[in-house]
Image (cartoon, rainbow, N blue to C red; front, side):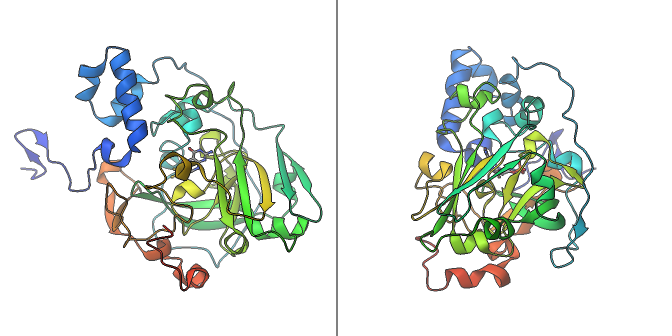
Length: 341
Ligand code: MTE
């Protein structure tokens, strides 16, 4: 007999975290409020998280998938890993992109019609030569390379993803950073007509939009910090942050802001959306750190999403700086990482 099944019920793995443990408290409370409003309270309380998310998709419609296209790139052999990659199908169906809903499948279901061409990315602020990149420039201004990185979400799941893009430092060098700049601020598209979570606070998780993020200048210039325009050999799908998103592999995933329209060089620490929403749970630095737990769950380990279902995902130990300490630890020498979490 399969020991996982006792009296016909699949035994919970120790890592089967309840949704109220990993969903930010404010968002979880809002969901309870909507289901109550819709008279679904008793029903939804007894349902698993993914079914609850489905309730919020009742008003969605069937639509064709966004068309991606193949990209030309070189493989950067410095940034590879022998770890099993997360299958494409999982990478594009398990997402956090609250502009399209707070459920993990909501971005896949609600983002397919996002218009990404034309697009404009402005690089401005404390720079010598401000620059506006149009859609086509994103793919040809800087030679594209592939890098395989681990992505560790603050919710304790992780993936291994072959990104295609270019280092942020290469773009910053093109605009010339002023000596007055100390930080870089990033901003996602603000378009409530296209992004239902921006016009409906309950769907958008209470975030004050546009979604914003920030890095210290040395972090932005670090060799690992990457602007992705594709994954698995093709352009990004909207749910992954098309047409261009940040990837900062040693930090929790919320730093990796999607669908970026503005990069601004500034002279003080810029705001970041999750810190604004719940300051005692999400910091500015957000460096992956197995020794500093989230107030509501442990960060010592993670579920690696690979082949197979989410809940068959292997539980593995979380590494300091997500395993990239050699490249980044020196930037934080002498800092109390419990205080600057
Ligand atoms: N960017 C925007 N604009 N909106 C978001 O909700 N979610 C963040 C980050 N970037 C988010 C975002 C979080 S919490 C994570 S874990 C990653 O995107 C998830 O990236 P993925 O969906 O490609 O795995």
